[in-house]
Image 1 (tube, rainbow, N blue to C red):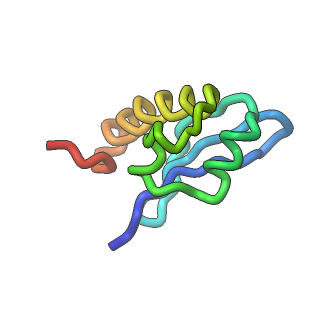
Image 2: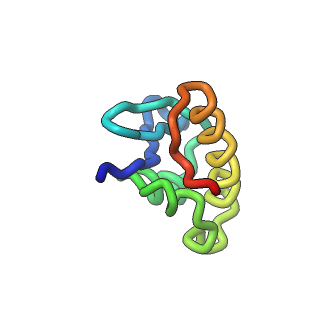
Length: 89
């Protein structure tokens, strides 16, 4: 079973680009300003379920905002590319 991961790349100074990797393909999500806590959490990839887990944010407001933003962008990717990423009933 392949896992879906969310990760960020620092492609230019001061900016993160976020991607979701699903079945070997990368889908661009969004860009935002560089924050060290966000980079530390997402740079090596995080399983999708953990990407939205606010208990792992450890009171980091930048990480909490990123987690909230990720959910809506992942829902958009599902709709746009007709793929299922989130397990909804």
